[in-house]
Image (cartoon, rainbow, N blue to C red):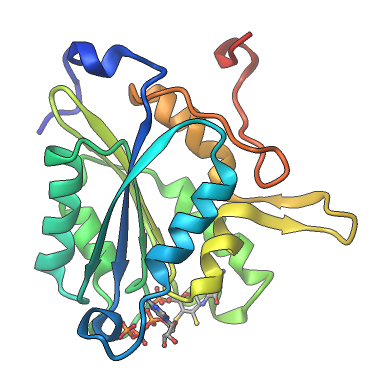
Length: 211
Ligand SMILES: Nc1ncnc2c1ncn2[C@@H]1O[C@H](COP(=O)(O)OP(=O)(O)OP(=O)(O)O)[C@@H](O)[C@H]1O
Ligand SMILES: Nc1nc2c(c(=O)[nH]1)N[C@H]1C(S)=C(S)[C@@H](COP(=O)(O)O)O[C@H]1N2
């Protein structure tokens, strides 16, 4: 792996191609069938409401096992060529919570701002927000790169962290982390993605905006 990617192949130069997203639910009990997984449907539904440009998803439900989580992430980036991967679950302090370690194990560089902002947002919902060790990283290959973000396992945490906080009039008071995702995807060579403003407003510096 390298941190100085060469020119991307022709298919990856098309900024209008659909975004390829990997959705990973990390849960011992959901993967065993003890309960129905709400992680992947939660992520899929939220993205379906938020993204205004085309996207496709590859989904994986895995146990809280460092090898299983790392292999899923590697496959999603190296084989499926996803540009964005969202994981849910396994970020806490319990012995079997290893999603951050599995994510760091496949990373070329860390993106600490995402974890910092998610914990800030989540403190507005639960005082135990500080128990989440969630990280975000880049996995950079010679010709492709992906942003990987850990979300907590509570199904409601998906919307809370991605969308942020609103006041009684629906005005955003604390921006969700997804506001920064489209520009990050631009910067790592992914497609140009747009969002529905009513769900989340993507921020790009003026010179990076289309039109
Ligand atoms: N994939 C999931 N589907 C449905 N509910 C979930 C899922 N993951 C977590 N939850 C719920 O959120 C709670 C906190 O999530 P956490 O990741 O800490 O799970 P856990 O207690 O480690 O158990 P497991 O990994 O077996 O889901 C769980 O106890 C469960 O109620
Ligand atoms: N937004 C949000 N963040 C949250 C929570 C939540 O309910 N909402 N739960 C917290 C709790 S109780 C824990 S233990 C940690 C880790 O959760 P995980 O192991 O399910 O990833 O996330 C925290 N972050």
